[in-house]
Image (cartoon, rainbow, N blue to C red; front, side, top):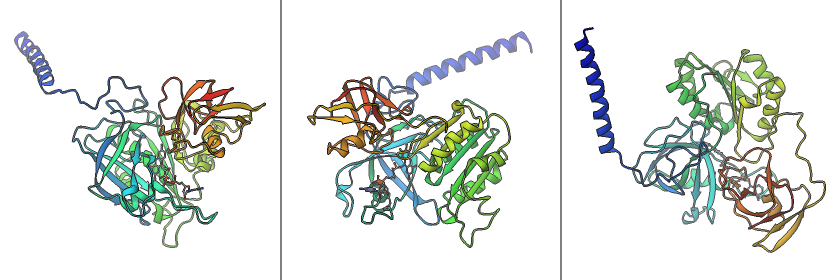
Length: 407
Ligand SMILES: Cc1cc2nc3c(=O)[nH]c(=O)nc-3n(C[C@H](O)[C@H](O)[C@H](O)COP(=O)(O)OP(=O)(O)OC[C@H]3O[C@@H](n4cnc5c(N)ncnc54)[C@H](O)[C@@H]3O)c2cc1C
Ligand code: FES
């Protein structure tokens, strides 16, 4: 290369930088939705404050039984969406009273994003929650049934920005083990799709436990990815296969996703674990992994509802308070003695007839936030919701000492 050619390259490179800079300065407009300061990493970069209106672009079932339905959501304002971390969730504020047969009042619920980030839409996948078999007469799940029965293309929903601590470490290249039970597959789909696009060389083991092919969500999509991606190891586990379900075709293991299966099938070596499933699965698997020798820093988990997940089976369950602790609900004018049960302040307040707003009951949505007037509140593990100083979450909090709440 002559000196002249070299100089020409440098000039062109500098010129393109300048042109880019000028274009950026001309085209960039600050979004009115971007708040001044966002706590990181709990909320997605560029996240909006409060609620934002989204239109349901379409919906489609993900399983043969039609109990899991995906909703595709586009922002009504048409502005670009912040890129969330694969594994994060959205918080919906539903006001369903207008629909006949819908539950009265507003409902707040969280739903994981079930796709890799896209600038123009979000997707969540919602499982219809039936009423418990016993005791008879209890209502079916309010929000999930409302979504399935009353939310259609063209409807408007209001939601908070993507949030949550449970997300893939996208900076690492360590092999990743995604473990999903039932609808816990949703954040794993987001992580898996992200890896497929951005880290196709990263080894991913996906363990997905469901009853049978009727409830097997994203079946075709998962099978397609397993064929195309040489670094994906797909372990579908059926607990109650149907007569027509074929071993080694529809599913790879029979039973449950448990430690024994992981020990049999996972190669030795460093791995990052991400787990999301029913309470029983999480409560056994998370301490089981630490007992197996997996470092606590490599075990990430999220419960979709109340669950008592301890990192180690050897770790004793949270102690009951030695003496009753005084808890004052200032606005309700009640002072009560807490002796360790119920295990969280929300259940405790409700058991004494004190009405407190709630949503997820697992520290994610922020509905039960309260201001601490005096005293302190402890959590078994840090809640997902981003608390301001002096605030606490009643649904996962326990009083550490004499407590006065603005509730
Ligand atoms: C971070 C996070 C992410 C999540 N992601 C997803 C996701 O991707 N997909 C998904 O489907 N879900 C997800 N969930 C769960 C979701 O938020 C809801 O909890 C779920 O849809 C159930 O809500 P619901 O309003 O339908 O049921 P609820 O009305 O909350 O009822 C829950 C259960 O309690 C029963 N019940 C009702 N009344 C009573 C009563 N008086 N006594 C006893 N039981 C009663 C209901 O029949 C039902 O079985 C997530 C949760 C969290 C916290
Ligand atoms: S009810 Fe959702 S954070 Fe407490």
